[in-house]
Image (cartoon, rainbow, N blue to C red; front, side, top):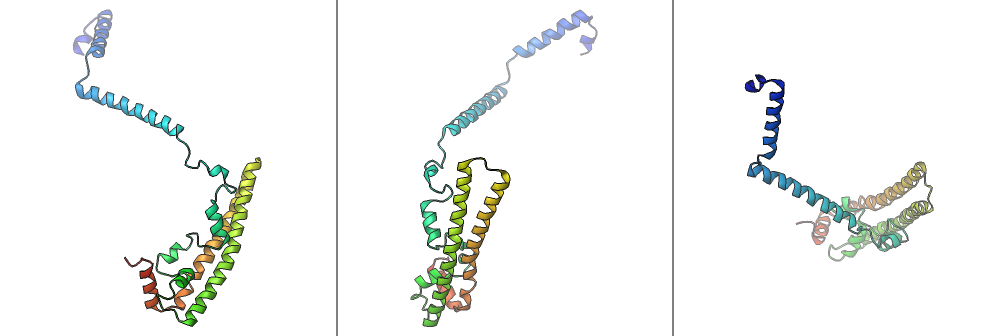
Length: 203
């Protein structure tokens, strides 16, 4: 830089241009070239992945033919019969039995006649309320589907439809979980432990 500063302006510009030219023509070290090539390769692979993802069929293909887009035929059948639909896992997997499986295992856990009658009554009450709540959830999902199919849905209308679905689902889950709160009053600790062992939860 000291030498360049002593040169006249034309000579300085000529020397500076020569340095730039040399910098452009001197090859990069091997590791720098490899890094640049890897960057270009990674970028190209990323673009290829994006193009492939864009052409990959949606995992929802076929579901557009459902009568209720958010529910499968099995979901609808489970809701209509008052099935658990996996909504009571918080109780079941924490060692608090539900009436349906208690009745299935009544012989193995040696339910007395009084216990069997009490759990049967719980199950009947749960099933009746679950069917009502399940049908309300189905109706709410049908309304959401119909609104999107018709078009012109506003944000306020959408919020109302979703709130109805949420309330229906909350009610349904409460029905299934709340019944689990009542079974420990009927069973002995040994029966509950045996139930959990038979269900495979003790491992």
